[in-house]
Length: 314
Image (cartoon, rainbow, N blue to C red):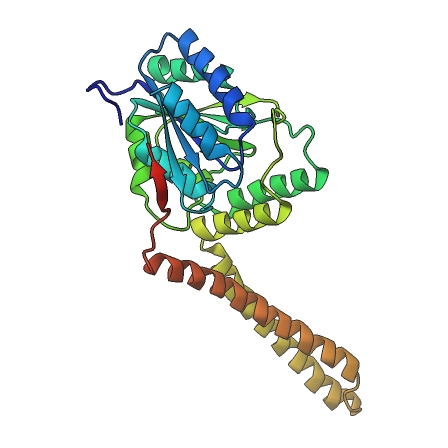
């Protein structure tokens, strides 16, 4: 990636999707912080995730102006997870930071994060939001609910409010890249690989330009991917639910037999019976759906399709 033999001390990996207005601001502010850190050997690795605006043009202009700027342009939109993987794979620095171009990840934290790695012996410094100011209420509620569910169901500890913004050592980055699964959930992969991580807290920051690309439905699907990718408990719970329903049905059968023997009157209530049948049918479809989600992930993995396809790379 670099013309000289000296590897950069710091790599900045930046996934981008329709961030034409944010990129120049991000580049200027982050470069300023890096120079204040007195780091001369550094690189930017931007990933254009199939943008439909002039994001690629902005990256091409930056690459022409500054040879420390590198980029990968995808042939289509493969998603942020694929972009993160591509960027981490391309990065060559001794330390690697992952940041968003919208400036919601404050570059001003970089000096302190790097200091903790160098002086305190951490392998990674990560960030988390302690507030969700200016975020839709419903999204905030479901986000907190998701983190609670993940902590209950998964063996990995996904920290509430965790951002993708983090600074890591080369061994940490290589460990993350070594996990080449297609169904990626980076917020789970980061803690899964282990290593010592220090957390930095900050309040929510609004975007400097553009609008968020994450709709409620996309976030919901992303959370489902996280649960399926890092927990098999839904499968166990569906089995326990089936056993529980069998016990309940046996209890009802015993009740009906006893009622017949004691009172001698016929069993009535066809409406309630229909409701029970519909309920059990829905329960079966629900548990079958859980199994289907796991099977679909296996199906995607065994096809061994590439995580992304690069159209242009510099």
